[in-house]
Image (cartoon, rainbow, N blue to C red):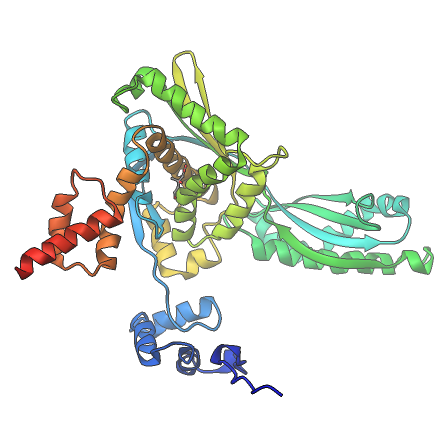
Length: 451
Ligand code: MEV
């Protein structure tokens, strides 16, 4: 018999955690930390002193014990279709806002960004199994459609008045892939709302109505009157809710970007870099990540769901069977054209857009755009960041600028004083920033102070 190992704190189950008061949750969690007192004080220091404001944030999610802040920046002077915007960007990565702003300024002097929404249709699915005859199922389709529309009439009325609603209902046969499996693929218009709740409520109503419809078909044998609903949920793949954005200029307008390349040579090298992201998945993933630096920052700032927009974009990037760049370049007749086409389901009413106090302000800063207008703005910031990244990569490289922006973070990590920070900013103005370089700079400076 070996000695019994003591139970480690981390192996213990915290019972009834969700029912604890917030203070008690914090205390329970702090037992996992070396210095619980410090932990509690730190997390509490991020609570809002305004109790009402804190309650609002606590209610966005569950088991909340503090708030996690991410910087809120803006990119001013972004010109889209001739209109200027100050674009809010919420992102924790240094360089992104600066890069987007620089790109916005550059393209602002060259006609700005051009954008158009291709379509705004969203999709939801009822996944079900039916063991009856396929012909019977399809022969009932017109009647089923009417039943489903009738069942959701009270839900769709308001949305129809705003110009949305249920656009189409299709029955898709997947029985060659999974026995007895079909789906109702439903297309929705949700106007300025992202529409997740509207779509999911309609789908669940459809599911019940479909089951009831077959139960009522007394003329069918018993085994053909049952529909098994597997699940009902919207799809985050929204290829028909898509936006296009592009910039263009004569090649000579790109002269001077790189001291070694004229505009034409720069454009060709830039195109090569984008083409590489069309043929190589490793590069494509990083390239598209750079696009989402800009898109996500706007999506988060406006209280939208960045996981949904990312999921849609990455599936769309793989629509041809290979994951590839979402942006592309054309060089024709002395003109450079850089384009981005992405699916994106955003809302400007409902959900967090109207609950999160900063999301509301972001929308006001943007002039309270419609959902399609917000799609154009977010996609623009995606293209702006993509342009900035590929331009840096194909000219002086990314690190020089990035590390300069990152200098403040490094100095904070090394507990630099205000005076050391000011001196470092002067010193690294014309010197490449590296961790080792900053470390050495501080060491020498601190030695000088001592001596
Ligand atoms: C970093 O966040 C994004 C980049 O890696 C994008 C790119 O490589 O195109 C710079």
